Image 1 (cartoon, helix red, strand yellow):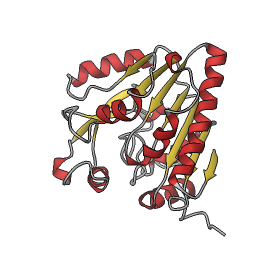
Image 2 (cartoon, helix red, strand yellow):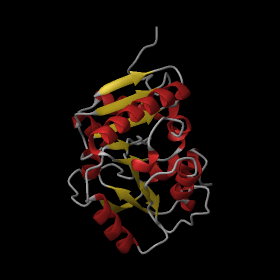
Image 3 (cartoon, one colour):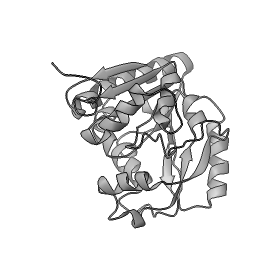
Image 4 (tube, helix red, strand yellow):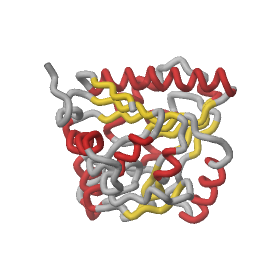
Length: 245
């Protein structure tokens, strides 16, 4: 685990984007192409603003989508497909983007995603950490042993509350009850994992992630077992374990 702490969300977004640029460039130089996974949410705004400006041969990159609500129209402001199209895909010309179709038949969507992602290793996964320490939509207590790359997840009340707090929905009742999500085991198969986690709302989750032993009641703790995990924090999100001088 490598922890990078800078003062602002913009600064960690830039440094994380530069770190990802180097990983992708090295991978393309070695293999001729790269496979990445992108997460969404308010915590990724600054990172993506910088990431799309990096000097990367995007036409040699395949992108996988981390998760999506079941039954939510793409036109809805909270749609993660809409998010990625507007903040990433319309700015860079990737070779292929595998988006999670939350409006399709869930079993068929799972079948297609699981087949595609199993064809080759993922080189880089951008994995956020939720306020309840979830990674993707693997809420506590998370299943660390699920073998399939993607699955259907039931969303917890704390997960729904985060989405409301970030302004994506008006109330918990408006948040879809289920989502298609990448599983913990699939996330951990990635060659590199980068987590960009700014803002005060994530301070408690980061404190638990850093201080606690690996525990499925705090799903992000499992990331500490990964050999190539980089965690980028700002002054606010690191406040429960790091004292600024």
